[in-house]
Length: 431
Ligand SMILES: C[S@@+](CC[C@H](N)C(=O)[O-])C[C@H]1O[C@@H](n2cnc3c(N)ncnc32)[C@H](O)[C@@H]1O
Image 1 (cartoon, rainbow, N blue to C red):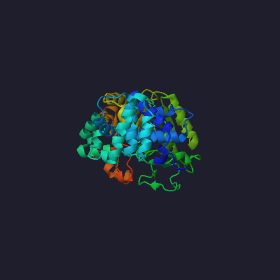
Image 2: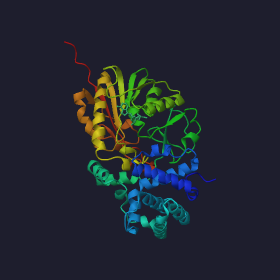
Image 3: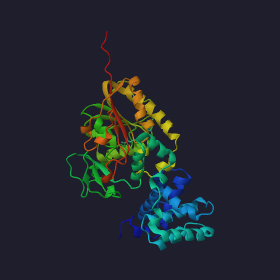
């Protein structure tokens, strides 16, 4: 039997396309996260249809602007959303997923109400005649990126980088794992990255890897593994992991021998954090609380703050992000981050260490926070290039870390993170 996501599998079956349509309607019409929409698919749906539908919907979300640019010239007036989505699904299958034309066209036609069947059939047949050449000559990076993100990345990183960042979002992310024991052997076919993560090809099913059930590793993007490492946790230290679920960074801190309190506000996510720690057999205290106000001043040797953010650094993994986020989400995320940052500083004992991280590419959620540090009694502790082997381009001249999805491009990229490390000023001598 072919793998669930192979073109020959996606070529057959209306349930696959119905699943893709339901996912697109949830994300694009109701602005619901893709993962939530996946959970809401009928429980009776064959897992292969779920996986294939997910693959089609993700492809449409990644290439929405380009697909619409191909479809638009064939439309005389705006069709209802269901028809537009069916055209997008059909075009993605024809131009990007290698589905045989008759199957792509027939199944897209079957998704729409009868009065629109002729239109979908005619448009997709014309697109099928052009084949993948229909995408040639389009400015894909620009078309597939919302205008506000394009101009923000342009301003922050320059025109060339805005383009390479956008290009990195075209491909799905590989599967990165963090081993529980550094000396363990990686699964067959894995690349060991210079920073120590194990990398497997996109689409690898983690639950089927040997060692998963035994808790030999956990899923964590190579860039997401860096903040906890830069905190350099030591055995016996009291460390607060603020905003902790699903717990990848908590696990790293516990593995280093620290006494970790993991603070998570969302009860469902806190439950997932507990489950993940149980699978890995790692002990940590899990507290359900608002990390912006939780805790006793001066009680921690170190704090890791992986603050909630717009997640624009994770678009390779979450192609729904550009379609869900709006410009106004950036200042509101930055405001929440500032409150968390202030509390993280309060929790530290004098001389304690803090790592602040966000998985956003927006400077308001990263570099802009550096200006708040002095007022919180924090001094930047510069990251040295040797602390992030093979990634000198991620170390900013000022000493913080800025990873981007277009870094390590030939290896499959990485999430975009901002990471800064601080030390709390020692109390002035008495008298
Ligand atoms: C970026 S994710 C954290 C990822 C996690 N550190 C890891 O490595 O697996 C942010 C988390 O912060 C939680 N969160 C958001 N606001 C919070 C707050 N005020 N207090 C505690 N947790 C919060 C969210 O529910 C979410 O689980």
